[in-house]
Length: 265
Image 1 (cartoon, one colour):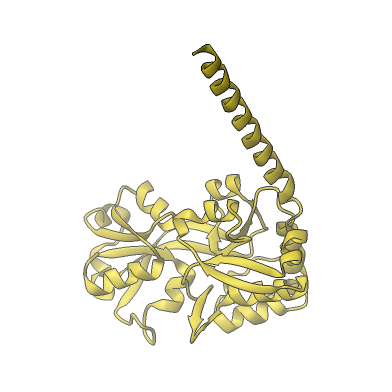
Image 2 (cartoon, rainbow, N blue to C red; image 1 turned 180 degrees about the vertical axis):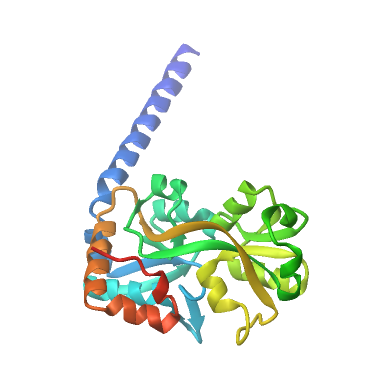
């Protein structure tokens, strides 16, 4: 019995040692992400369907983020591959190397900055309440909105804003799903990014009867890479170049987000 216990203990120690070595190797390898990406020939970008940053036109992903990511991949000499992820699992997807970065109008929250090495901010944003236009006057402030049933994207800044304000909410897979809920009357309101609201609701859009009202937060977008990754600094360098030569502004104007651009050094 003692031999069995000793063997089990040794096996446990070995397993812990191997796990520690694996974690250490992963951390050490993160600073060579550029080499890893160039060797495999693809930059895998984690996204969701989020106009005007990443969305599909026919079979292709387009949008401000998608277009800039393509430029970065081209400069790296690799192909870009866009992978739709569950936003709530973005950190796990990154750590597992299912993706190389999260580039999808991602708000630089404390959680994100603690779990990833992030780029400099490149766009300003806000979380806004979306509801039927004919209901806007009935809910002028946060207190009155506590009577509403909200739809939010799981793991998003919108969900955090709903929680912080004490709203009753249901978490869904994407921001676009929350708009469908409000349109169908299944939810009274949703909380989404201001940039998405500008592209997706109001006259001339798929949701002409919806509008946005209160801005619950102000925030900034950044690209998230693996902790310790050298990819973030490379993207920062590209941001600076694209800003100085007017490329960022040109792409931003194409998608109507030029007023949200953050100056790059």
